[in-house]
Structure formats: structure tokens, C-alpha cells
Length: 242
Image 1 (cartoon, rainbow, N blue to C red):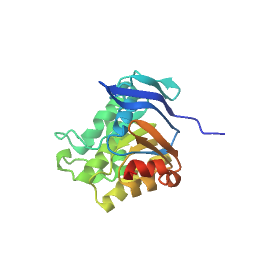
Image 2: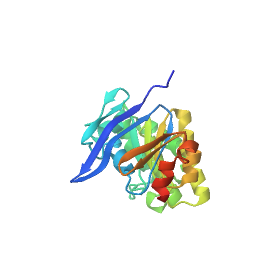
Image 3: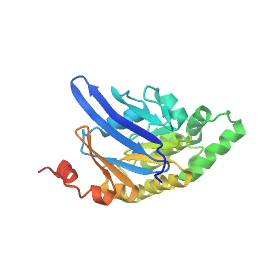
């Protein structure tokens, strides 16, 4: 029996004036699945995840999450239902400490509201899981690049997501730093969190992904096992040309 579908995007179309950024894209994600989304620059990857997370509304098509139609929902409504997102460029609340940066999503996401002691404990537990507990009282503005990426993931985890959309979480990191962030993303499967990741670092995508979807000029051209997908002639052509 096939695993249930957590998110199903069907026939997604997004236009910007006369430019069609997405042309009838279908994408599904199962609970706990690690799905890689790749494609050349301008292929529609960010537009698609923006439609999934709610930053953009699709012009056509539907997005079903956990058997609920969220196609027209605002980002905060999707977040409360379990769709979280981390961004390529972290933007922490720089006037706050690292722990206080987690207090915001923890207060926002948890129902019923947490007491002050519960809030501190929850923040510390998440910071421990991403290796930032020792920086909990430090100002967020003083973090290194890899620490900022960890904090970005921690803020998303604080939302208790069922689906995390990770947009180029590895960009600009060194080899050892990439491995640190990959380990955190891989570990989310133990908690039943599905991850949809956009990334240009192919060796990392091959290590991370259980399945890969490829976009080209706003259309899906491949969907399947990573080792098979990267050898498809249409995918090779998309990246390397004729």
C-alpha cells in the first residue's frame, strides 16, 4: 500500500504579467519524506515553494495539505497547519538573544500557550538539538553564518511543522558546515517531519534526497529516484544544453 500523501499540489500555474513562471506543475510529498527540488536558475523552484508556503497565491491549480484545501490560505494560516519555511538569507531579530528569537514562534505556534518556564524549556531543547544551546543568551547579531543557518532552522522547528520547506539552507557554507546542516535536516525524519529542499549543491542533494523533482522553464520534467533522475537525458540537457 502506498504511503498517504501529506501535501498535493496539482496543476499549479503562476503568471507574472505575460510571463508564465509555472505551467501546470504537480508535486506531492508524503509524511516524513525528503524531497529535493532542483532545476536551472529561473526554472520556477522558488515560485513553486512560495505558492506552497503562501507567499504567493497560485493563479490556477490546488494545494491540499493534510486533506485540507489551503490554496487560498495566507502564510500564517498554512504555518499553523504545519507548513514551515526556512530562507536562504536568515533574518533573525537582531535586537534579541538567540533564545528570544525562538520565543516568538513558540508563543505563536503552541496551543494552549506555554508558561514562561515551559517557553524557556522548549527553546532550550530546540537550541540543544541544533547545537546552539551555548549561544542561547547571546545576541543574534553576533552569530556566524553557519550559526545563523542553525537558528533559521531552529525557528522553523519551533513551529512544530509537518512539512519544512528549506530554501538553499546550504548556500555559502564550507564543506564541514554543509555536513552539519545536512545532519540536522536528515535528523528531522526521526520526528516525522517531511522536508522539501531547494539546493544547487548536487552532492548534498544526492545525499539528502529520497526523491528528486526537476523543474525546467516552469514545467516538471522529472520526478523519481535521485540516481535515475540525474541520468535522464532531459535533465542533463536542462543543465548542460544540447
